[in-house]
Image 1 (spheres, rainbow, N blue to C red):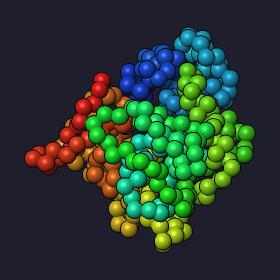
Image 2: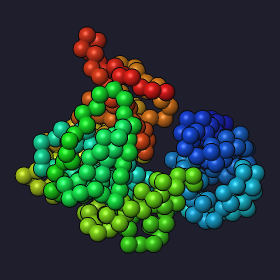
Image 3: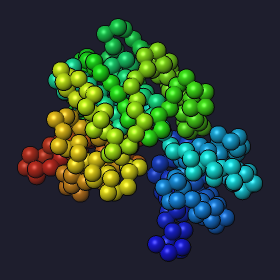
Image 4: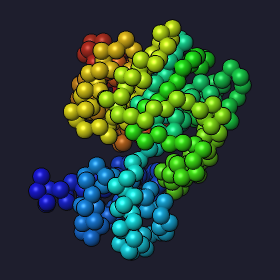
Length: 341
């Protein structure tokens, strides 16, 4: 890739973020990404970093971590140019580790179909907030489900379309573990500050939800191994109890692997005696994408929820909506059921 192509790719990344990912979620990030996409000075600074480190979310989070003004683009830009060495240093050593517990809402219908008890293993677990789907309360279009112990301090609300198999009770999870290159420790102030900084500025309800989930996880910390999704996963799989059904979850995680290790991860998980639930960008799991028959989500920025590479739904990236697919038996591939704009 020559310099011009590299420049254009970074610009397109920020433009897509502004047009697809930020609208309706953060007006401030939408404005910043729109400005950065056409700003040669900012794009030039980003060009000093490896391409995976130029991620809009990472730039904005590192800026906020270092105290940038949450102000219109010109003011933020001036701060960024003046403080670039510190921002660039943070971007080189950090990674986005969005740990959104509401993603458990879109995983729940598939988890509930697994014969229990469940041994739950998450790849890209961050602080482990998504390892506790049995400890949260849920509301699917107003239909509430609580843990057997009673209502949780965390309520995960999810809008649905189609006909998702919403369970009457939560799954029984007897073992839970996570794998992450850089696990976050909820007893470490630096780690919790980073986790909170990854929440977008206007999302006050989301921040409150994550803080409440932190309290639940802090009271019963999970086993989270520091390691690589391909090299170290087998050792963690070997720890899973044999008297439970192993479920491996990847949620907006394996997209960060380069194509070759991602393919090795998929090949390994495919061969396991386990259920693999993936909630990744369309195209990240090629077999699931192919099974869609070329269909794309009509709602921009959604993830594709699959079980053992069979597509089941399009989902909101933070678990806020679940658009279930129905099987078109005549066509032999899924077709979408009633996705609202």
